[in-house]
Length: 104
Image (cartoon, rainbow, N blue to C red):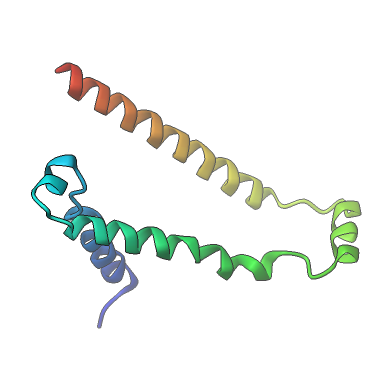
């Protein structure tokens, strides 16, 4: 029986492990990485459609939510965690690339 982590592993290996979209690959006419990148970015575009049910269904419902004193601490923590992780990953990736280019 396959678990969810098995499918995530397959997804990761398929889209990230063997995705060469460098200039050298394009000069060799190797577009295998390019089509995987195209499919991945096309699939990512439709992800927000699965989150539409979280939006208020009317302007009145939105106004009621704005007036409500109820707040979600978990939602705030999740937002800040995703934000910090994204920024940290971007900074570490940039630093890694710079150090690799500089040969340090």
